[in-house]
Length: 306
Image 1 (spheres, rainbow, N blue to C red):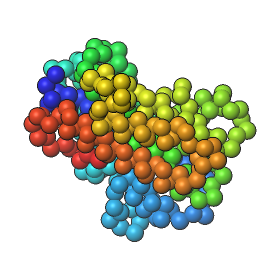
Image 2: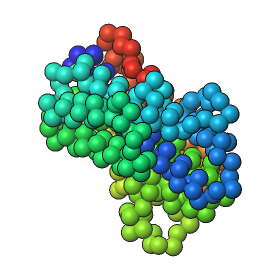
Image 3: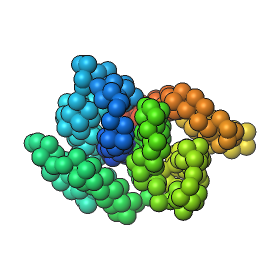
Image 4: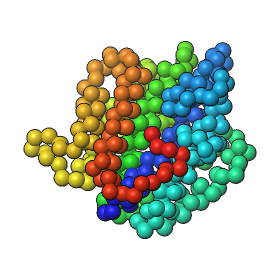
């Protein structure tokens, strides 16, 4: 496969996942604000932007403008959708017609201030559903060959990164008693969690489920396994001694660190643990780019790339 096409498919997966997960993180933030009206909303907004890698440019930043509506903001989901469309255009000969049409339609339907005229809850639902439709179409209309593996790899790395940020939002909620309930709902995990643990559970149980559950598709361990499996299929791996792919080693080491984490340490220094995982995602992206995309033409990604 041409490195240019592989590069585009990788970033389609990342940008679509980024759009959906940014939407989920903002929704959790707004719910936590409603639960704790005594908190300082300006400080909470600044903390959230810093968590998302954006330096606030005012003392009272507008979270919805920065993370949702602004096409020029590198951390908004609207910019991520625009970048996904541009990447899909570059890989038009590989992306299925259904996937291209769905990405293009979604992008055009959300431009021009249309999102600002919607209630935030309706906007979040729309974005989540459209991203899920595109992901489902990719899985059902594209051959599961190298191109699909690159798309899956990009989606998995971005999901690891963004889920770690979503988990870290619980630490920004202060004394909110429902912080982890909101995080579970933000990950679409509340129903699955109640089935596994029951209605009465602790914060540690919620964190344990989102980090270590092997069957829930948004848990960190499940997504790390998906990314490692995609990498193992993309290139020959020296299984006799250890993987010779730097990206596989990075993700494998992160997986082992989480997998064997003592139960009593799950909530200990959780923001720092999640920050380290975000660094792993960045280093893994660099390793994948150096191995597979080095010969691709330089591209100016709309909205930037983390």
